[in-house]
Image (cartoon, rainbow, N blue to C red; front, side, top):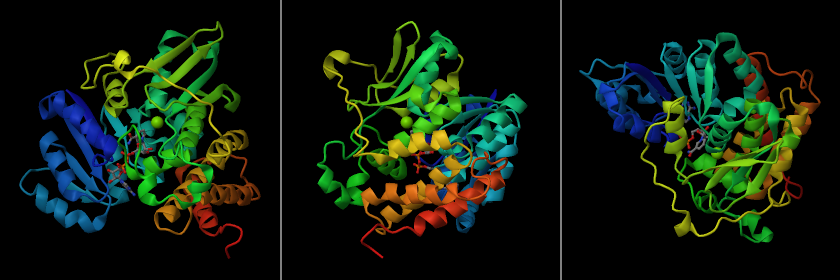
Length: 392
Ligand code: NAD
Ligand code: MG
């Protein structure tokens, strides 16, 4: 029986993965090793009971009594805190999904890569902040990393038909998010609620806001670079409001292969779960006649400065990814808390990158998780210290 673990089980991606496992036979078909959640102990316990997990870990230590109570009498271990997530990630499992949001997701993915497991990677921040480290550990141990971000899963699937060295460029699509059609002068006044609604995808709040600012696409451009080893000039972004084509691979012979599907993460998660085979998934078929037309536009970097910063980060390399990711997370926290305007997030991130570029060893990729987290902490401080011109 295949063993599985989910890090970030109670989130949007985690819930979709849970749904797939339950539909595929649940505890009778999979041996679940570890499930982790951030704060929702009751939902985590429900999932752990349904899948008869070995251990359930809640990140927030204050929620441990609730988790223990909800699991009483089941024989399922309950634990809390980052060290417990670390320990759970080191337990052997055949397939592990990294679906914690933000830099907190780095550690479990890295542990799976270090122990040579199969890592289904939704946590794009891992590749942005620590790409060379994660990929290097996977190479050393023989771990398999399967992309779960829909665009990267799409590229991965289009590459089945050709070799990476015959790829001319890849294109990842972007819906354009909540503010695609807003007049530019309204953007500074966008509220958190307005930024938290996505036209096509149903996702966690942070990635939804990142979609509106295009920081999500910026992370994905860097993710593409780290995962597939393509230089920034071979990675294109195309605004595609219908979100039906997720990515395209253009080969040197002039052929372009596209991956199409409805915007449902269960496809990309299910693809990684079934890989290298394919199996039926509970995803709606594609009715192109009903959709009628697919439209495209070039992204406007004036509206979305995050895209320009992504290319800068790839070209700078070294610690730039760790700084970019952390500064973006801080700027997002500040926007959600009402301390920054929507359009000021890019300024805070650029400021943190500028400061970091003057520090020693900026050009060297962080060699371990502690080094990544040191850059991360400094970048959060620098981003938080920034204030837009005209304010103090
Ligand atoms: P989410 O906010 O819905 O869920 C995140 C999960 O992480 C939850 O289980 C939460 O409890 C847990 N968590 C949060 N903070 C934590 C911490 N400090 N320590 C431990 N656990 C913590 O997020 P999501 O939308 O499911 O996204 C998860 C990851 O997948 C992100 O990296 C995101 O970029 C990526 N991703 C998501 C989608 C999507 O459709 N939602 C698509 C592609 C990629
Ligand atoms: Mg994506």
